[in-house]
Figure 1 (cartoon, each protein chain N blue to C red):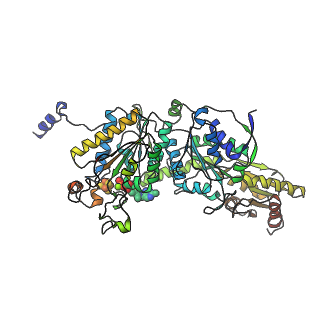
Figure 2 (figure 1 turned 60 degrees about the horizontal axis):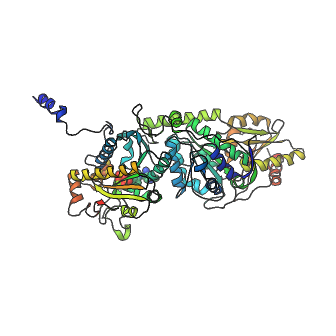
Length: 257
Length: 362
Ligand SMILES: Cc1ncc(C[n+]2csc(CCOP(=O)(O)OP(=O)(O)O)c2C)c(N)n1
Ligand code: SF4
Ligand SMILES: [Mg+2]
């Protein structure tokens, strides 16, 4: 009976969604509920839809997504912590016809790699930067990131981020949007299906721009949950992103430039 | 006969890069080697060969631009001087770990810290023993003339691609700044994209349907696989040590005493040798060309026929440690050097040989 039902369900005419072949079959190394997996998937779907697998080179960062190359079925290089935009610069300058993108966390992009981020964008490198902002250092166990919100508890701000002592969150996306070398900047999120669809659209737009043009970097921030680092169950983590202490609204989403 | 030119060592490296078909140079200015990037800029390499020239925001960025481009199979290089090379160490470690070819020149200046802009050889340990983290080696070439500054660029790329390993050209402010006659080799064309895909099937050139995706990484979280990878690297370094040792023996056949030196010190030691010979001392010179690999066996074989060795280096004594390892106590070996940017004179080197080795206690 169950088998019959199953066989009925898996008929190709009933297929409404299929995993893109640009995601490998390797088991994701992310915590259940983490935003990284969703972000990976929509990037790979976009490359698949654009039929750009053979023309895309990706850079993995240091952070929870250090193993992105295990999951993305494209040629990839793993960078040192924060240096992905420099690697992307080197590759894109020598392979100008390829789509080159970096995938970086907030510690990677906005702390240790701030110089590389700002200068690659300011030079107008023709690359896409995907910035996964979860407001925390996920990989190393939930320490404060440059993007950690005021009052937010992390393992190195256990009583909440005290801005007088620890400084203010760095709004690097707004900073990047000021640079002449950047073509477009947007902030997206992946906490609801509607947000995921919008985020995918933004990534597609940014990639399509890179395919046709050479007038600068495109930059997409994706506000993403780190339920483990935030010490919340996955559903609560997503709620928190929309909730009373609003995470996403603080960082209003949409096109910034 | 190739084209003859009077050039600075730094200019010779730059001209050689264009002629060797290098695809890109990424760098950040620092004395005493800023002429490399300045000369390249003056040559419009993008017109001469299509070579990419980019001034990075830091040495951290330039070595990581090199890392990225090397991963995509291109011939890329950077140059710097000591403080900048210190900043690049993380990058060297990644490049060595990921087994990528690239060339770096260090035009060494005195340290520690900001030190001085004058010549020094005090970065020997950093260059040959690692410098960055983990068990890895750069292949290290030590030019002692402006001619070799030019000639070692294509040699370095040959070795880099043969072994998929970063190669360092370790010179110093004297070789970089001085002008000498150079016979330039004829230009070779840059590899086409098709040639790159053929020669570097491992490179990130875009995944096609006929192959698996290419991944460039130094990471493997599985300890047994990581150890295996380390064994593979060590095997490579052993092979390099068997096949790539280069040195020059000058008047060593009848020598009772030898100087061991490289780079600018070997030039000065050669003059000291002549002064010593004129006084009747049977002195030779072992000029090292590769510093890694180091000629341990050759020195060990020479030791029984020698009465003493003087290591000559612009440092507090770094090369001497490898010499002592090599001779295993069979013969007295000492260091003589100056520091802080002071260059030793031939007379003081000979005096050190006479006092500390020839006249000194066994
Ligand atoms: C040079 C260097 N410093 C520190 C680390 C340790 N480290 C690894 S990941 C990380 C932070 C990652 O945070 P983020 O970029 O926000 O990525 P996430 O894990 O949150 O996705 C740190 C500090 C490292 N690997 N290399
Ligand atoms: S620690 Fe956070 S960012 Fe890392 S996998 Fe877990 S939820 Fe995702
Ligand atoms: Mg993070």
